[in-house]
Length: 75
Image (cartoon, rainbow, N blue to C red; front, side, top):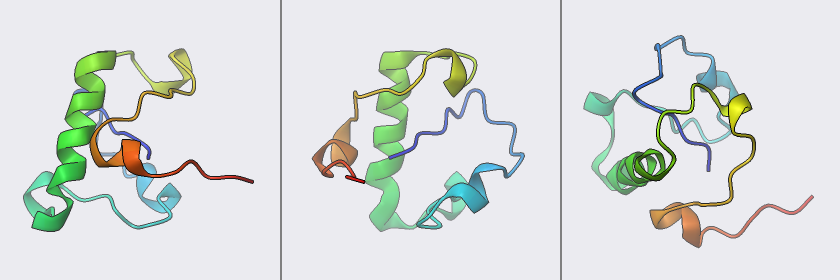
């Protein structure tokens, strides 16, 4: 799962075409069945803080909530 820090997001839309599942919504438009992922997104950044972008912290392995239950992709 990729996470979006709501405290750092500037609504530029760059993440939308990169999302393979078209799962990016404005919070007001989020379907009820996906709310658990928004909660996981918040919990992820509660633990990580506001790093100022993904490049500064690199790949993370501390998935939370329903994302922690998804098996990793193998290539």
